[in-house]
Length: 417
Image (tube, rainbow, N blue to C red; front, side, top):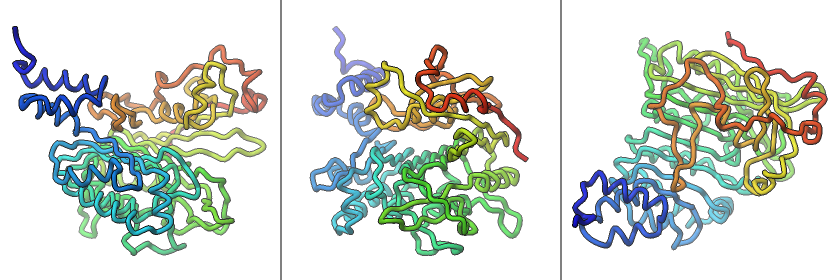
């Protein structure tokens, strides 16, 4: 009778992979059961790492950076800063930044790291990710990194002096720009973006055009979780997000200008900076007023198309009440092609609209970048499979602005000049 250890390594890896999905706590025991199973179990166990960044010496991240310096098995890391760690950053506790320094040293030593994702699970105006931390993590990434996701939901303390360029070394856009040539996929949702974001791809004085490996990218620019407070005096000349200012102890931002960002990337694409680009979506959201509904706009740098999606808040159906506890935003109804109505939680709708560039949670909690091997339609279209059709949805009962919804809202798309 054949033993499990007699199986070829390809089958062993698949078996251990499914074991990791079904029962991840048993995998360390499998890796220690015998020499033959140690290597495949070790590789599956540490290939995709989910780190909750807590502020204590026995936290998961503290153990990881101590043990895994130079680990050539690690391929992807998901960082989730906890409330205590963010509080420690805010109060300037030295040991909090010692954790950060150790993390950066560990990241730079991982020779085969392909993917890094930093996502905030909870948003709080009093607990922000310091700019220094974001910049340090980006600058610590090894040359092997191809996929980057930074999603702070706007809760990051990025400041910029009006009309001046940040030369302090804590410019996140400049840090991303430095690694942009090596990235294959990129997703950003942070509180401030400026022209330095793709500075490394600007044409040189001698006419030389730097290029990027970028194939799929998503930038979401409606990210502040706090109330918008428009400042009529304008923003810095190179800022797509106007600067933050203090207001009653909190941080508030003016609405972004995604048109400038879109135009900038269009120009660089026309110059040949993105020879491998397949889809590059920039999504923004309008603020509602008395005459119009709010809308989501999706601009595609690849095809120069802007798509306009009106949406409105709604009361979720009884079957979705349990999901209300999840951090998915409001329940909304949105119009897509042919003015079809789709209903769902805002976070789910966002994913459906960012077709081809959306990141997803993997089977063991890791963040998975869009599959660049999957074929895309020549034109941008929302992922209708990720949306829930509102046919039969009780609009009279659920829509909070139904009169404007049926009188004024239209889905449309147009070619940007």
